[in-house]
Length: 267
Image 1 (cartoon, one colour):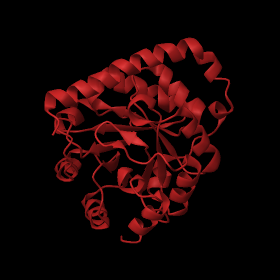
Image 2 (tube, rainbow, N blue to C red; image 1 turned 30 degrees about the horizontal axis):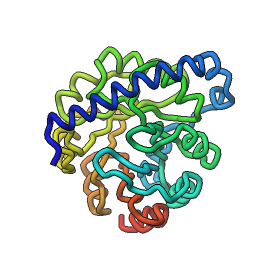
Image 3 (tube, rainbow, N blue to C red; image 1 turned 90 degrees about the vertical axis):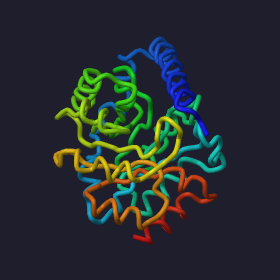
């Protein structure tokens, strides 16, 4: 089991590495170049409309090759085949990891997913700088993720405002009540509760139940991590959740799209 200090060190390592990557990316591709990309002028798909569409499942289906806690999850499948299968199974949105160092993601995965699908795409990334938000739009994202554990409240509001000005939606992720209460701003579209304990990697869906009543109803409510039983989705939906971010449960199977189809048939 990873100690709280050990996990904090992992998060600190990710953030430190990410800051170096951002500076290198900014030198390699200036913001003005990003603003010239075709996707930059694309109208984003609405996260709210898609998540609340009764014809879809509420599932935000994730493409994730590996993670710091699990190592390699699935590096045999392609983003094209998996995301198209997710969409065919009724995904309300896609989540694409773009962190390469720790999660095996690639920015090209997001570009490829955008070409192949007509539903909202979340750029799953450790956002620390406005550059990454402009980059997300240029890559074809419709939604950005802001993680309260690594951002100051003023940064969350500033980043959310920028994303909204570019037509994107904002999902803000929290792990506990303290993060939630300090991080709520009108510019956010959705609040995600990560059921994974940052201290020891343990996952308990009880986090979502504990926090749901503290999330104002003006925000979409998303439960993230540890969702491996269709009955859990039914319970969370009854509690007030609109969205369910699921990655590892599908990706650990040889055919993630088929795994999602079988999963959603259960609720």
